[in-house]
Amino acid sequence: MLYLIGLGLSNEKDITVKGLEAIKNCSKVYLEGYTSLLQVSKEQLEEYYGKEIIIADREMTEQGDEKIVNEASSNDVAFLIIGDVFSATTHIQLFKLACEKNVKVEVINNASVLNAVGIVGLELYKYGKITSIPFIEDHPQLETPYNVLKENKDMHTLFLLDLKPGEDKFMTVNSAFEILEKIEERKKEGLISDDTLVVGCARLGCSDFIIKSGKLSEIKKFDFGKPLHCLIIPGKMHFVEEEVVEMWK
View (cartoon, rainbow, N blue to C red):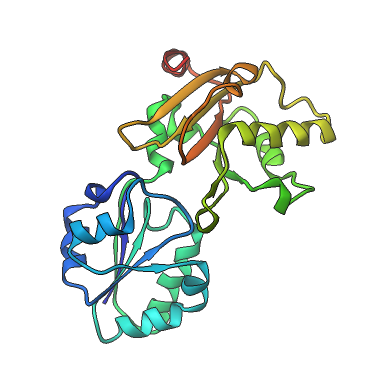
């Protein structure tokens, strides 16, 4: 059996009871280490789960998925995913391969930024397409996040910010603004200005989360602290949404 288990957003105790019981019955436990970030170390997870954990980087997951699935054909294997199981599209390949090889799979869901963002006060069903902002040095002609914002029109736009855990490199809200402003300078379509209402978030789902709303010119001066960060540009808001967003100023 292959168990795909979401760990939630904060620490070792965010796992569900069902997920923890599954881990304790597994002979091998992998932890994906490249799509997100927990606020605790691998060692803290090992102590709480009572299992040795193998860190699976992108190469191991995407190119070594055959090995993981083959192990699960004769043993119980857990693959741990920060947040929810399928919030990052990468992991659907592992699920698909296991199904194709007739290996039993159990998916154990958990919280992700996609639902934790509800605390901001913007109605979840009024978000448009979600997009990510990659590091500009990797994509010097980047336009996608700007174009998604344009396509979303009156809908809210959630921007997930790039990370490279292996290099201890995590994009900040402030860096995301700089990238969007550079694209605006190039495209000159008036989607982004100092007066744009924005909401910056850090460590959603954690006890020390930060949410700050206001004009872009104000929020880009704010220090959101340690990762992970994300950014929201609201669209057309109901008055209740406006009242809650106002609370975060």
